[in-house]
Length: 147
Image (cartoon, rainbow, N blue to C red):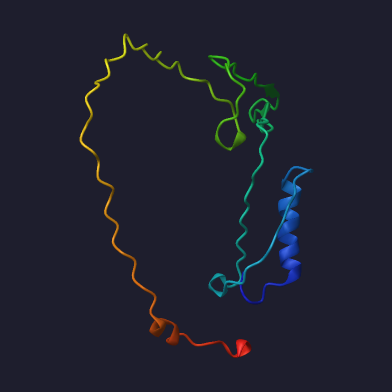
């Protein structure tokens, strides 16, 4: 937020995040003053440490009918193919079905090793290091507190 952002507003934003987060979540918050935002407050949430649990489903199972005034219960659709793996997807949400990877072919026979020596390899050329020049150190100022 802007320069008029106070501790009350920061604490209120942290409370909103903690109410939306898991009860055991470790929440660390801080504040940055950005006058370009004016009266707005920007909240950034970084989440880590997912254990692969499924998020709670937020589906409306009861639909109201305006014409008849009766509620109709909608059955959840069954998945076309059950998940074969319980490994969490990116971000720890959902599950991933492993792809069928092609089998790597076994090598038929190792190629015969040549006994003839090859030409010696020269080491890479490294340019010589420049010697230290005291004139470079004289260009730097010593801070007052070190004098």
